[in-house]
Length: 142
Image (cartoon, one colour):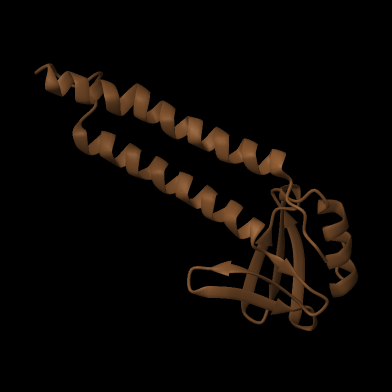
């Protein structure tokens, strides 16, 4: 099955997280840097460890979202299996090895062979057809 990306969803999701990261940098980190350069106290009751922690958490969240979107774009669905990128190569589950399919928070969780692949049907222009294809291949229904 050919997966067609839903560029509107992918672009909107990536953009919103990018704006969130820019807001954190613009509303928290930049004023703190300016205050320090001017020899003034940090804004509010913030400390540098707190500011750095917020920046790192936001950056990691952004990287996680980008990785998720990348994984959705690079997911492959064939007659025999489903696979997607993993940190060390690819994660693949053969349709014959699927032990369960569940839906949770707009995600489609496919389990089998001691692995789990989470899909976001909204990331695909043909997301409904993808769900029907998976249900047909696995025999699991909503």
